[in-house]
Length: 357
Length: 274
Image (cartoon, rainbow over all chains, first blue to last red; front, top):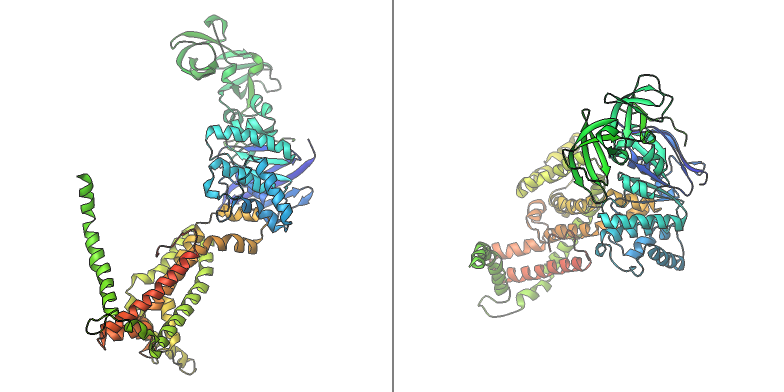
């Protein structure tokens, strides 16, 4: 990956006295597909709007290719945005929509016509030049919105939950299309979503945010396999998050049972969060597990069964391809490698952990 | 059976339409196209070319046009300011603009008559400042003023309505694509509010053209609009045939102006009148 291209430096922003971003510091590399992921109200859209120039930070600076653009109006920034609700100009044809930015920057007619053709081809809508906006489906409108943004050859494309309004199948198709576009164009994508699956599918790097703080930055694999705290673990996929106490290095106690793990460096008897992915829980003979329990419910999910096992006062969520009828007595086992030990958050605000990007 | 029942429900409206809309129009057409003895004639229509009638028609068109232009000049920036305000305040300001419309139309105009008269509030204030009194009442300006005062909300509301329908993200998108604020206005805001402007123009121009109460009260009989001429034919000369003939001519002007506006309003949004 290239050099740091955008730097959001210690950004704070509040609306009506409510803190949205608190000393956010984020670097984005050139030619990277970066996703800001988090629940609504976590500050991800505000971060994107700060980049686009639609908001000004209360504190902090934004650097773009080494230049301070904190107070630059949106029309002077070399990046373009794809909006959640498409925001196409309904009084213009498709071609006029795509040509909007190029006409403003006074490009020649031949150049504009070429670009319109190229952009429509890129989003698989050749021949739609003279259609009206209203005659297009949601997915087509979103592709026009993307075409309208990329003809301006931005260095960075900002996407604000662009697939949020589409149905599941179309959303999946568009995900592949976006990955293809990013590879063809070779520009930086900054993508905002609350959909963890979308983030895992498309991103080079994911920034998990909550309540204005960055929780974790990493590749999709890192974020999924090594969540840094209970919030990330819970937000990215399903998890069993259990209160535990670190007995010593490589030994943790949960639900009254001591189990081996691989984590070291915690204090003795330190309270921790123990995170175990449901697909990492193995159901074995009662005698072979570190804990015994009873199957409470079972749901067939297609690829696997989702089973709930009540053991030592906790309802374990288990994903397995083997059928275990309700009421059967089972043992629970987890490979030490698959047990994640995490520090408990210091406060309910879950302060961001200092990270080197 | 069920279908018949539903049609029956429309009965009162059909009676209303026939009794209060179609019948009067037929009567106007009948009177307008016949002489005192009931013989068919175009004379009543052609009497618009009578110099006095022509003069008041042109004068009416001029005042209505001036009134419409003033309303547009006042309303467009107002609608923009309104639209840029916080949502909470928006509804309050709209309420303030609409509030006078809850009062009786005649009362409002009578109030202005008192304010503008030679011994009225405005001249009293001028006198107390040592300034000479000015003739306000019974001038064409007073009539235009009254019209603007009365019809301004009808210009503001459709424009504001069209403007508030432009989403913030549309403006953001235009800015994002490189447009500065002036370009956003001419390329986005204006084209998207043109339908509101057109219906505002119709809603102001048509009543201003046909008005006779405002010119009666604030013009003091000195400002003779085509509406006043028609009123006089009906109420004083009792020449219903001539009055109806002139009404038909005026109706033709109204319909023509609305048709003209309509051809220039392709998307047909906000034209509640047509």
